[in-house]
Amino acid sequence: MRERGSIEVGKRADLVLIDATTGNLAPVSDAVAALVNKATAADIRAVFNNGALAHRDPLDVIPHRV
Image (cartoon, one colour):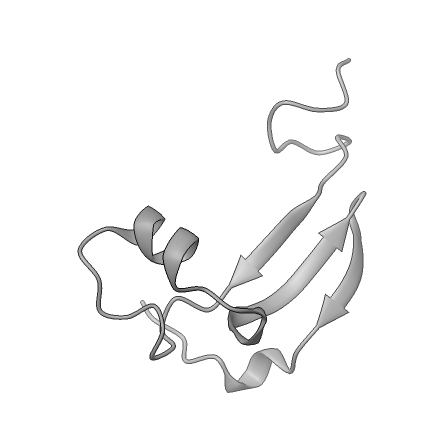
């Protein structure tokens, strides 16, 4: 089994969760451009390195959207 390339059980996970509802990032018409040009460290809510939580802001402050 390959360890990288997709998100699946048993594979390594390096990912960053970004709050797209901050004043920096919402509303936008091009989400990728907003991430590249406007996102800051303050927009990061969690970082996972090799599947383990490496950094986390309080997640209960992020508004939930359905």
